[in-house]
Image 1 (cartoon, rainbow, N blue to C red):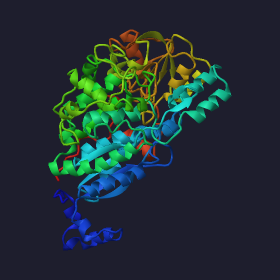
Image 2 (cartoon, rainbow, N blue to C red):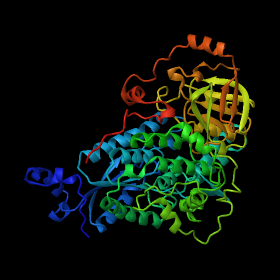
Image 3 (cartoon, rainbow, N blue to C red):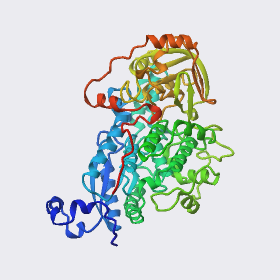
Image 4 (cartoon, one colour):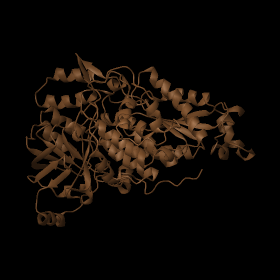
Amino acid sequence: MSVKIKIRSPKWYEGLDNVSHRSYLRAIGFSDEDFAKPLMAVVAAWSELGPCNYHTLEIAKYVKEGVKEAGGVALTAPTIVVNDGINMGTPGMRYSLISRDLIADSIEAQINSHGVDGWVGIGGCDKTQPGIMMAMVRLNIPAVYLYGGSAEAGWLGDRELTVEDAFEAVGAYAAGKITEEDLKRYEYSVFPTYGTCQGLFTANTMAMLGEALGLSLLGSASPPATTGRRRAYAVESGRALLKIAELGIRPRHIVTYDAIYNAAVTLFATAGSTNAILHLLAIAHEAGVKFTLKDFDEISRRVPVIAALRPAGPYAMQDLDRIGGVPRLLKKLYKAGLLRGDVLTVHGETLGKLLEKWQPPTVPETGILFELDKPYKAHSGIRILWGNLAPNGAVMKIGASDVLKFEGKAIVFNGEAEAFKAVYNGEIKPGQVVVIRYEGPKGAPGMPEMLKVTAAIVGAGLGDSVALVTDGRFSGATRGIMVGHVAPEAAVGGPIALVEDGDRIIIDGDAGILKLDIAEEELERRRKGWLPPKPNYVGGLLAKYASLVSQADKGAVTTPEPLQVDY
């Protein structure tokens, strides 16, 4: 079939003045017939430096097949991957959040410098997905998001495992609860195949939200990376790209306030990763949509948790997949009136129409999904906290903690490494609030995730008796009484910089309160004596990022305004 959707490629490849441009593509096999077709790109976040994106170049071949079947021609380009799990607790973790914005920037550079008419982005590990979605709305040419899929769950005896178990096993070993031989069993068992981490951690959360936003095909988030259905969705994504290009549908038609609203509802109903708050704020920023922490806060008050997915529950993404995947969840929320159905999707239809047509498989959902009137947990998966310790907000995954209210005395660390050492050496005691600061967007820089510390606390049996507060981030696998994204951060003089050992801290995940229980006069006295620390880096990428990045409550973005496009 022939389609006329060449919105940009003629400027690069048509006319006698572009003979030299065409010669470059003839060198890789382009024919006159190819030049007559819409030119599409397949951007694969690819790397062999970990299992999450190991296979995405292979998936790209199937996307190209779909594009060809629909009347276009496609070429593949790569973008970078920083593997979050491998970098937990290391200096490399400072590059994780930075990579999100680098991915968006690198896609902008490649897409805008080669005149393509549309593209499919393939993501996997945590930051590749929001990075691609940010680029989709930034560039605002026809685009489809495709997830590479999660790894199969591991097994130890009859126990289903995810990588979360390996991180917590380290804490259990340090506390003398398991042997070194037991610890090795986890190492060899938790990650049996390529693909992303298996629970509803950041990667699977963002894949799920890709469906809720309308940027990816319905049902495409849950099939494991190793399945044939993953390849089928790749072909279909290529076809869908040409369809929406014909219809004139662009990402900013899809990513509206209501679409982000739907994503927030889905996030809270599943107790997904707190990182999604940052990423949705960043996607909204790139799309020019005003969506703030106050919007998240209001939505969270109306949505209970109806999915028992790890770390909030016992099940992995593959378990959700076998009962119908994300559409089964979305349909429940839609029928209950919690989703706004008039939003467009990359199918070229509204989300409401798609969900009305979609029928679940005849497989019981017992234990994995719950009804809205009999939820898995009566409260939201995430709560936004406010108070004198976080005037601009903080985030707590209350869906992954059995303790919503906690008061304790602060034990303060000016960095994650000191805190982990204290946990590992048994220095942290019940009733304490571990405060880790100077790990925010500017301070670290890069706002590293704290899974190594949080998992060690839980693994040591302190998950219900010790809290943690930080201006850094958490992994989607984090559970316990953990408060992150404290804004403003310590490096810019936020109140978290003024906390001292022994201060009483009040956390109320139900009411949404984070309070430093000292007199305002004392807080002001400390503020006057505070001096900003020297930056950790004065050169290179980390220093450049620190000079550009916004605070966590703004999405930790590095671009001042949405890109103005006119194609």
